[in-house]
Image 1 (cartoon, rainbow, N blue to C red):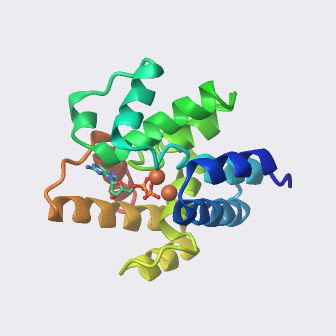
Image 2: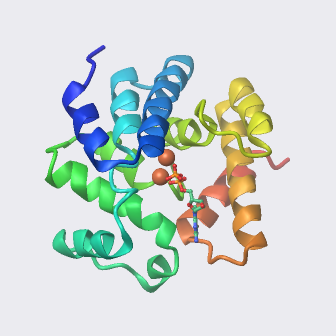
Length: 190
Ligand code: DGI
Ligand code: FE
Ligand code: FE
């Protein structure tokens, strides 16, 4: 397992102390889940390290970054500012860091919303971000427990948590989030 010293040095510059700590926790958790569920451990670790690389950009800088990469946000995306760092993050690691692995790029791109037809690596990163050691929100233990038992069950619990929270605060819910939730829920219908 490589140490990825250059990525860590870059992240150390771009992120606050708290976000940098989160990033290391997510990378460790993604590695753990990859080993448990049979995803590629190196890809999971790299995706974990890089997933929030654009998270601490101030709003103006984030919009400039997206614009600089030629990315136009849809009206729905404009209404979901918390999804921007995932869109910018994918473009940044592809264009600035030269990452070409489609699975890593997709896992980073969809780590905030999820989506339908998630790859194994998408699920590993999404759930690593939800259940990393630094997460302590009420309900995290239930989601950790579900992830421990079954990846798909964990995924459904994570979507339920997200959809409930967003609806509770009357935030727009991205169609990727809804489609991810619907597919996860459909798996458990009988
Ligand atoms: O970047 P992190 O904080 O580590 O975690 P994240 O990338 O999963 O972002 C979580 C935030 O994103 C959380 O506040 C909920 C928000 N989010 C996720 N899906 C949607 C969303 N916000 C809106 N408005 N719509 C969504 O569909
Ligand atoms: Fe994020
Ligand atoms: Fe994160």
